[in-house]
Image 1 (cartoon, rainbow, N blue to C red):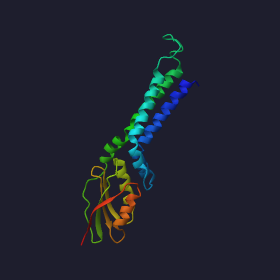
Image 2: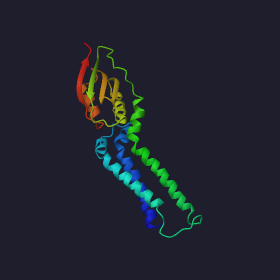
Image 3: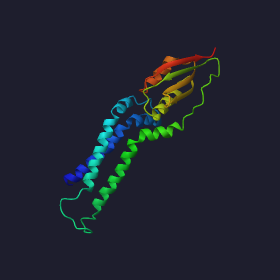
Length: 207
């Protein structure tokens, strides 16, 4: 393998890796939901560096395009064997595929937010019995709807939680819970364990 082909593969691989890293702020919480884990505490770090990773992503992708489509140093007659060899066509196919992967991955936070917003309920949480209480907290560090879905999944697993709604649009969580089994402090601790800090706003208990 010549140096040009090795560099092309390295830039393609690097662009895909950088795109995935740039989107870990949203991919991580969604993976946590699928795996049933408590959260993805480092997502805020990846969100902070997302512009840098995206810059690296598209710089490497641009270099891969240049290396693939630049004119070869040696002359190659049109319709000759060297101009149509399968390896060259395969490299271009891989480039187009990798570009699609990079674009979808880089746009994943926006795409997932649009999709996941439609799956979340906006119905109000209503206190239903004497032991029920409602805690409302702000979670300003959420950076995509997948984060809200992850936090909501974690809350619903807590013993004593009756309802839990987490909204990315308002950056809030509303939790109805059994006050004999769970405290506001434990609910906030459960949210904090996902890597997103909760800020209490209201606490309502049924008299």
